[in-house]
Image (cartoon, rainbow, N blue to C red):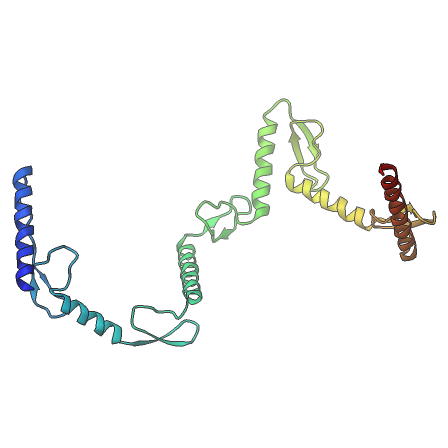
Length: 249
C-alpha cells in the first residue's frame, strides 16, 4: 500500500516536471503538511488533504462523532450534538438570525449622529442615512413650501387658499382646490364620513313606502319586505326561465 502511494507521488512529480518543461514554467513545489490527527509531517497528493493516511482520517471522524457536546438553545431547551450546532431547530436559527439583524440595525442606528429637522428645528435620530425630516408632517410641509416657491416664480400660477389647512398656495391649473395630496385625501375621508352618517330618503321596492337610511345599497324598508321581495324576484326568475325553455323546445 505504501509502495503504491509513493509511486503515485513520484508519478505526480514527474508529470508536473514534464508539464513545466513543456510550458517553460518552473516546476510546482509540493509543500509538506502536518497531519491534524497524529501530528506527523507528510507530502500530500493534493492541496486539500489534511490527513497523512486514510486511517488517520477515519480515526479523526470517529473521535468527532463520539465527542458529544451539550448546549443550551436560545429557547431554553438543552440539546446534544457532535458538530458545531448552537441551536436545536431551524426555527431557533431563524430567530437567532433575526435577533442578530435587529441588534445590528439598532447598533448602526445608535451610531448615527443626530440630525436637525430643517422645518421644526428639532433634533432626531434617523432610521436611515438619507432621512432629512423628523416626521411625515414636516416632510409634507417642506414639499408644500417647495411647490409654493416653484409656482410663485411662474407667471401661470394661480394664488389660492386651501380649504383644509387654510394656507395659501400657487396652483398651475385653475381647477386645483387643495395644496397637496394629503389635504385632498383628508377631504375625501371627510366626504366619506359625512356620506356614511347622513340619512337619505328612499322608496321601498316592495311596499312602496318612503323610509330613511344611511345605507345606499338598501332597497327595502324592513326585513319582512326584503324577504317578500326576494321571494317575488325568484318566482319571476323561475317563471321567465320556464318560459324560455318551453319556447326553445
